[in-house]
Length: 251
Length: 251
DNA sequence: CTGCGGCCTGACGTCGCGTCAGGGTCAAGA
DNA sequence: TCTTGACCCTGACGCGACGTCAGGCCGCAG
Image (cartoon, rainbow over all chains, first blue to last red; front, side, top):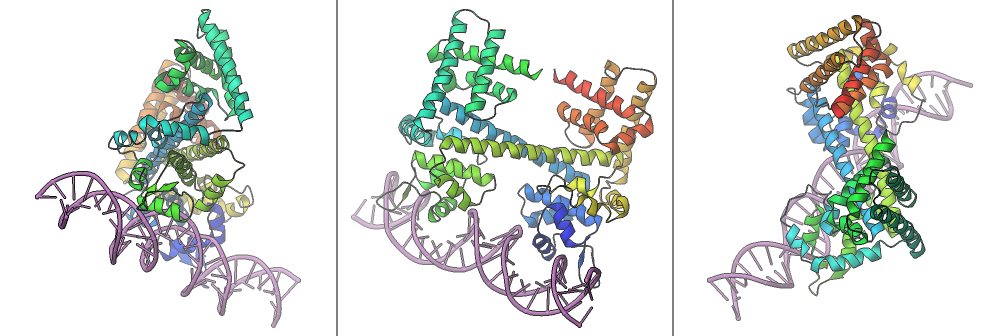
């Protein structure tokens, strides 16, 4: 197989293959009489591993030492790649969750602390700064104001969205007050409306993601406080309704 | 907030912040009399977005144009980040699945085609090469041989693993022959044994991942063929048992 | 035998920082 | 008050992983 074909197959440029050849990371196992690179199946296998490790952020030199280590059999590589990929999956989900939390916070007019927002980055050296940074601005007042400004949509939009969500919140509170069970049809219908509202106004929110939000309402005190201020017990109520609805939709 | 603190909080180096300042991507909103950089809450918000977009692979210059676009409100950014992150999640899961498929193929002595293996890379320009590359080596015979060699564990290990899996396969076949239902206790127990075997010999395979493999047994003809050669109907049988077991473990 | 596309090998450019070098700043302690 | 040590600044050079020409050799189609 010639460079062009290999490049197309693997989704890289010819230049990249030249580079890998030069630095000895992937030398084609043959050349034609004219000096054209010839890649064998085994070369493709190696390229595949190279690209995987590269995607995972390894510097090429380290990839070379990994692949050239004679004590590491191929299954070992697959195992490692699998582990690394799953780590990445976890990290990415955490980032997705963080963005969702941020949106939800925005919708409720809550602002997150800087620590929370950056939590997902940098392999978090625990404590150490937590206190230090916290006191930098008195209880994040300045921060909150900054958030308010920097996160503003056009005022009209925000008012509309706010009115919509206030409406659902009020109906949730009414349901709670009149003794409707949190896992009843009626409450779940409200939850479903809540979910669709998010999907319309923010991001596409499936039942599973919605359930995650529901959990957050009781696990994060700021979100809990938001609902408790409307009516005591409402946080738990909404959370339950949302999760019940999620399993209903899921089945 | 001073550089050091911001850097620690965000998990980047001071040099990085210097760089972002120089290129105008993130200029601290203030300086002390001595010229020390002072980062405001709003600066941190911007930094957060910068890091997210960077993580997603955007060149810094593009990040700057994105963030400086006055027509894009912050919610729009969150929306976009959310979308991009979910894309990445999908892509990563695909890669995880690919690695699992590769391992399973290896365990069964099957070898995948080059197209399949690279499928997950390079935003796959459909067809175009499919046929072209396919005929490069007659029906991937050379490829198969290469695979056989390059994927060899130490012979002893592989024989042990092979014997184990043959044993379970045989007991599955026996169960099928004697009319045991695929979603019965007994068949599910076999499936569970199958799952634990994979976990021991290859990678940590949870019920959900195992269910994915089960689906593959009937969706991919090469895996189907593997089981059908042992006993007709076995592919569907194992697939069903595995998925039944997954829901049993999950609940 | 003449294009024309594909291959080759330098060689220089670029991006996103890492890593000194040389020098000011600032709170704490001797 | 002076020193010390931690932290800040601005160049400036280096590096990894290629992108992008430039100049020249294959190979097959017409």
